[in-house]
Length: 245
Image (cartoon, rainbow, N blue to C red):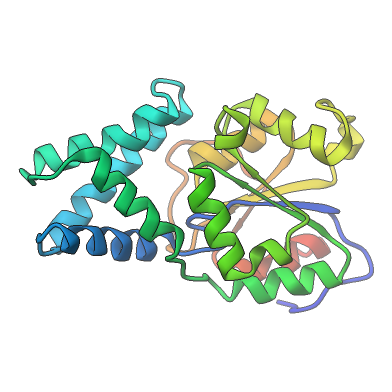
C-alpha cells in the first residue's frame, strides 16, 4: 500500500462521510452522552450507552427511508431513550446538552486528517457529505481542522433532505459542477467513501457514482448493496485511486 499519490488518479473528486469514517463516532457518542448523563446526576453505564446507541441508529435509519423528519429524529430518540431507561429528565433540554457536547467531541480515525492533507496536495478535490445537525457537524469540522482541508461540506440539515436520497446528491452536484445532472463521464470521476451501507453506499447508487465501503471491523455486506471497493483502513484509498485494487 502506498502512502503517496500516483501520476494518474482514477478519481478527481472524493466525497467523504464523517461519522464512522473520518471520525470515530462511537467514541464521541459515548463521551458526549456520558457528560450529559452526569449533568443530571445519572451514572453513565455501558448498558445506558449501548441502549442509546441502538435507539439512535434506528432513528437515523428511519430518517434515511423518509419515515421520520429530522426534527422527529433529533428529539424522538431521547424521548424514547429516557422513557425506556426510566430517567427523569426533560427530553428537549437533554437533547441540547448532548448536541452541545457532541459538537466539541471528536476523535480522528485512521489518521484521516493527515490522509486528506496528502490527498489535497495531490490535487484531489474533497468534500464532506454528512447527515446530522448543522451546528454539530460544522463545529467539529472546524475544531478538528477538516474544514481547512476540504473543498466544501454538504450537510443534509442544510439541504432539507438526507443521504441516501438522490436529491441530496443533486444538491451537492449543483454546487460542485453547477448542474444537478452532470454527465456520466463527469460522474465516473467521483467516488464516495463511507462506512454506512444504507446511507453512503445506497446514496452512491442513487447518485450514479462509484462507492468505496469502509469496514474497519470486517463487516459483511448483509444488505447486498453493490459497492465497487472495500477497505479496512482509510489509507488503502491510495490503492483504489491508483487502480491497484
